[in-house]
Length: 222
Length: 222
DNA sequence: TAGATTGTTAATCGATTAACAATC
DNA sequence: TAGATTGTTAATCGATTAACAATC
Image (cartoon, rainbow over the protein chains, first blue to last red):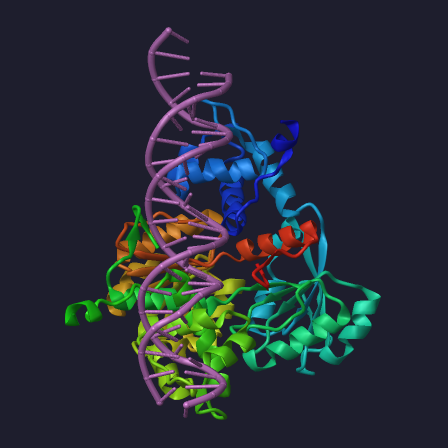
């Protein structure tokens, strides 16, 4: 009996991706409201209230019938669940448009990630300091990794260079790769790979525009 | 009989998001190979070959047994299916880190999107020209929309301003909103909304790092 | 012809939602 | 107590994959 209760329900991948959304909303109302119900959140965020309740149960947050969920503990629980309280060091390869934007992204520190070094092939960029992060020659990445190791490597290079960048990071001993290129990468199974491909989003928009009819599914546009 | 054959199979949303990935790969090999099999692509892209075959059938591309698919027609078919051949005008709200990166994104034109005007609240930015795009006062957006209408509006403002930016675009008569903020927006059902939330990707990475065990599902890390 | 690959149908798998019991 | 909300279980829904027939 007790054992069965201890079995943790497996959280779904889409649920994990929804947590930052909840977090952003909860932080925006934190000063005003001590409790929030799943239904209230559902109306604001345009998702089903059952889904919110279920997502919260995955991270072991319990609400009170009639009252809802306490906002502050909920915020803490999500941040802890996602590991925002554990700071991870990060290397950035490719200091172009996207790379620079990421270097200036101030939210990362609150989310437990810090870009400590940038790398590029363009020797005009060496020595530049962007938001306190220095840019180095890509050829020196192994040296720098030994000096100051990192868990996460961000790839923001042209698609023709994506795999090369990934190979370098893997050789260094990186644990996770965050790939902003459209081109997918090959990596050993034990390396975490996350692709953030903005072309996928644009493709969706352009396809829907041409269909010219919104895809409505259960009252939501998909 | 004939009628049944004409019924188009409904493409899945994840399949649409995979198409740009195929496109990127196909373009990279276009000069070298006239034909490519689903199995070859599957190995390179680390997805199932059945999935590729199925995705291509959604866009009515037929391959030849033993030979595979012809690359050039495949590229054309994907581009046409996604509407890359139809140029859409776009407004950008928020010329900060992300906004500037998007303005400098050269791929958009090949994908049928052109940012024609930028808008910001910061009066130091008015009149600036980034990659041939001028930045205007956000208060003048309705005037500019009447002058040069747009189909797509990109939102790259802080999360506290996201809904305001969305409301402005909706008031102008925008058809699609591409939201780069973590905060979701409210919009009428007939408006296409696409959220590109990089926090969702980071959340995934950080969660997996802390679990410290890769989630392997059918030979793929999820 | 034999073998390899496409392409479709059926089975599986995962995620969401509906229904309802538990609880404050 | 009555009513509202949580939280869980079962049903539904959608997407992927396996199996296999068709085809070059």
